[in-house]
Image (cartoon, rainbow over all chains, first blue to last red; front, top):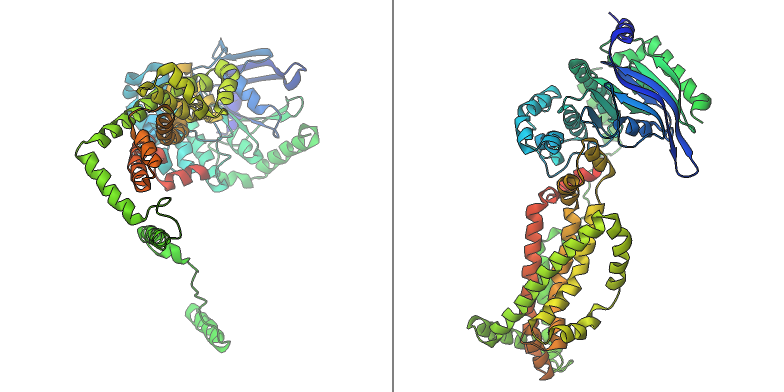
Length: 268
Length: 295
C-alpha cells in the first residue's frame, strides 16, 4: 500500500486536527503584511511541511498555530477548539534543542509536566520519560547533563520533551537545521519513525526542499511579501520513506516542481 | 602490483630523492613548559629581591617605602597582636562586621532592584535610567552625607560599603534575567508556564553566571567601601589603624595592615567563588562551556 492510498483514505475519513481559515498577520501601524489568507487543514496522522525562503512568514504561521501570537485576521481551530493561547495538546520543537544545562536529560524531558501539573506529576511520569528515551535511542543517558550530549542527541532529548505530554500535534520549527547533513538525514528518518509509531500529526517549517519532500504528505509552498501559500503539493511516495528515495525520478520531480515554484515569484 | 610492493617502491623512490619523514617540533614557549607555581614563585622572589635592593641601596627612602624585611617583621608583630586578641583584632572585627553587613545589605537591595529592573518593564523603563545616573556619580563623595545621617559609628560605614557594592549586583542580576535565550522563553510560553514559573525555572538559573560575576565585583569593592568609610568618618576599624600608622610615617605597619586586610577581601571573593562553583555547576568544566558554545 502506498501513502497515496493512505492519504486519499485519510483525506476523506481522518478527523481534522488543525483547521486554519483565512489566517493573516499584519505588523505595526503601517500594517506590514507578514501573512495573508492562509487556509489549510491538517488531518490526523498526516505530516505537512511549509517551505519558503526566509521572511516568508513561515515562523509567524507556526507561532500563530501554537497560540504564541494572535492572528490579525482569520481562525485557527485545533481539535475542534479555537486556539486562544498556549495549549497543552501541542508539542513544539525548535532549531536549537533548548535543553537546560542545570537539569539532567530526564528532568529536561519532564519539564512540561512539571510546569503544568507540578513535581509530583513529573515524578509519576518518569517511567514514560524512560520509555520515550528508549524510543529515540537515548537509553542510559537519563541522568546525564546536556553538556554531555552531542547536537543530535540533544535534539533526540528535545523530541522526548515534545512527546512527554502526548500532544495531538507536533509543531516543528526547522528542528534539525543546526545539525550536520548526515546527522540531519538520520534524525529525519528517526522523526518519521517516531511519528508513525505514535500516529502523530506534524507540521514542519523548513527551508530544505528535500527534507520537506522526504518527510511530508503535503508540502505547502509559500511566497514572500505577502506571505501566502501559493500551492500545496501532495507527495505521493510510499511510507515509510527511506533515504534511498531521493534517487527516485518521482522524488526529483517533486523537488524540481517546488524549486520552480520558489524561483518563480514565490521566492522573490 | 601488490600493496606491500607498491609501498616498498614508493619508499625506494623517496630514498633516492633523499627524503625522510617530515617530523618536526612545534615551538612551545618557555613559560608554558614550567609549572605555574614555579613561574608565580619566581616572579614573587624577583619582585621581593628588587624591592629589597632598591630600599637597602637607599635609592628610595625607608620612610617612603619600607624594605620587605621590615614589612615581614611587622607582619609578624601584627599577626601576634591579632592572635593574642589585642586591640588590632578588635579593629579587625569592626571592619569585618562592616564588610559583612555592607555586603548583606547590598545583596538584599541589589537583588530586589535587579529583579525589578530585569523582570518588569516599569523597572526597565522608569527605574533603570536613575540607577545608571546614580552609578555614574563618584560614590565616595557621598561619605560625608552618610556620616551626617548615620553618625560616626559602624552604620555609616556599612551604608557606604553597601552603596559602593550594590551597583554591580543590580547590573549583574538584571543582565542575568535578560540573558535568557529567545527559544527558551518561547518554549516556556508554549508549555503554558506562568510568569513566576518562568522566572524561577528559567530566568534565574540561566542568569546565575551573570549574577555571580556582579557578586564577585561587589565582594571586592565592599571592602574598599568599608575602609573608605573609616578613612572619611573615623571609627575603630582597620581603616583607622592604617590612617594613624600612615600619619606617623610607620610605613611597614601600613603595608602589613593592608596585607591582613586583603585576607578579608580574599575570604569574601573565595566564598562567592565557591558558591558559584556549587550553584552554577554546569559552567564548571571548560569542556562543557566549549560544547555549549559550539552548538
